[in-house]
Amino acid sequence: MEQLTWSAVLLLLALSVRETLTQRIIGGQEVERYSIKYQASIQYNRNHYCGATLIRPQWVVSAAHCWRPAQLIQVVLSEHSLVEEEGFEQVFNISKILVHYSYNYKTFNNDIMLIKLSEPAKLNAYVQPAPLPEDDTPALPGYTTCKVSGWGVTHIYSYFLSPVLRAVDVQTIPYCHNYYYWRITDNMMCAGSRFGGKDSCQGDSGGPLICNGNLEGIVSWGISCANPYFPGVYTQVRMYVRWMDWIINSDNPNN
Image 1 (tube, rainbow, N blue to C red):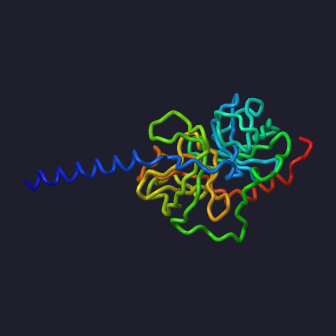
Image 2: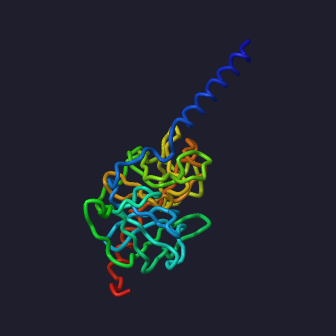
Image 3: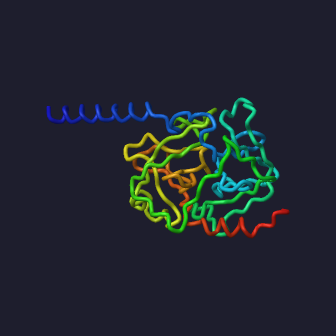
């Protein structure tokens, strides 16, 4: 009788967890149109495949694993729907791409790249750069609420991107090594939900994680999606602010 009762409890718990996961959407909820003014879409043949973040009028930052030859891709700002032309999009060819010199494609360490647009974006009510952390910006406490956004898949094991921009609130997860052991470096941070069900996923790569108003993370990698045992791993942007400033400030404006 005791064994039967324990089995019933396990079955009830399994059904409860399954219901929780299927009710939640990985990509969160559709955002108000053009409310995430720094969000960029990297596209190949006008098909979205990675996110990015506008940080200067002529520069966006993304994940290095999103690299493609510059002549094959475009960056789109003020994008909301991927399936309709809304009239506010700003579409740019690429002037140059600079992948971090120490990027390791096997471990995803230093998973960051800068993209220079063919011309400066027109800053307006729909397009504005995201602030970066500064030297005196306090460290993020564990379980800080942050927002991640993108057009990535909205269901576990799905292959279909969201047709509209979505966002979800996640929390920074301290002691990331406890989840991924030796794979985590000081250049990475984890964010998600302690209960699962909230996460970035395929198609969100390269997109922004905004904490306390600053760009703190870039969607990089993880095991599965929305898994309570494996939070999303992000490139820790504050480790690269000086590198980005050096690249941008030393750039030849004619190139």
